[in-house]
Length: 154
Image (cartoon, rainbow, N blue to C red):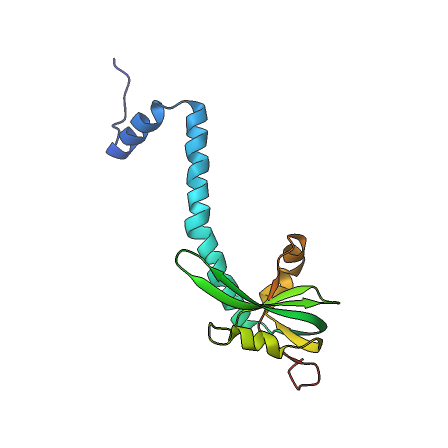
């Protein structure tokens, strides 16, 4: 009597042919590559969308800081360019303002920010990620800046 064999589907046959001819090292390499692609094309965009939604629904935080310097910044790449204002403070670290900054006003806006006391508005995600960004010496994005005496929400 012959042993019973179960019929293989075409998908099982494909994987048996594809993976059967590979060494264990190659299988691990392809698996890691697949995980990398999963992270890049699925998990990262989902994280960006979740962070944007969280910022919309979470309150911002205001900080009073002593700004010592405001510099206009222009970065150009192959396909894009960005304009921002880099802010240095004595007591809060370094920040970057992107909102409302464009090619036609970035130098003027930086000139308007003279050394002194200012209130900086930070998004909820910027507050949560602040220690991470400080560790890597990157500037923290702010939503807005206003003189310290101006009325604003706390």
